[in-house]
Image: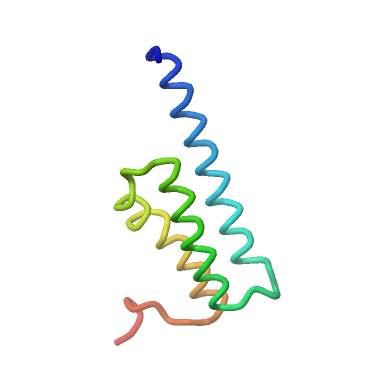
Length: 86
């Protein structure tokens, strides 16, 4: 694979990941019938899909993407995050 082809493939995977995370965030925030357990399973499904695209980025998912999705779940289900507990 040429450098240009590899770069194109990387950009394609990044676009797919962004779309996946954005759609997941939207479902978490807007699906009125979504339960708390389903929300948690949806985050794990997003993690699995992201790791299929980027197998070596588990730490990045846990540091960047998971907190974004969990913040939505905490707000939606009115759960205080650990940093808010005194």
